[in-house]
Length: 228
Image (cartoon, rainbow, N blue to C red):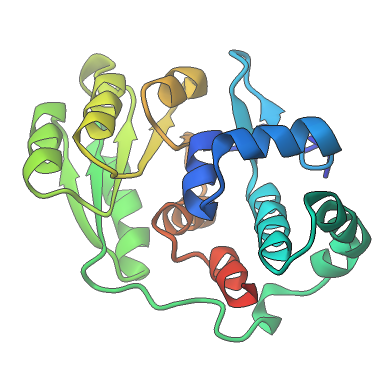
């Protein structure tokens, strides 16, 4: 729990976690430094990287504070209940998974049409509307005029234009960005405005779960809302 996550599990930037949970980034840093209980991994460039389990733990802390506990007491309570909570299967939480609305659109900016078809299959299976573009300029046009619910961008698109596309998304509005790449470019991705990073080849379950997290429809984020 104290920063022992594998690098493959630590995929969310501190900005993404702050947005998902409604907790300022400076508060997350203060909790980390003061209580040393939820310690994110660090990338080679020093970026804080949170796992899904850590975001769930932070959701618990946030909700306990909202109910009147002091941060120190909330962290102690998390320590007491961590093992018990981890043993409860997700399927035992009723109403945890909200249905995905058909209007939820994922824009896939991919360099590889076969990889795009692979990702599209799993997203459409989950009920998402998927748009595929193989050109970053076309993706930028869509971002400006028809913003999707989330952007997935291969950083190596058009010889490495994915980082510029991340910056375009960041500058054009609050569209969460999932950056993917066959090369570990997480530091560059987060610096360019991405909120999560996955290394290719993608694991289908992790990929879909990450999309859900970024648009706020994942089961573990819904559980946090139910506990408020």
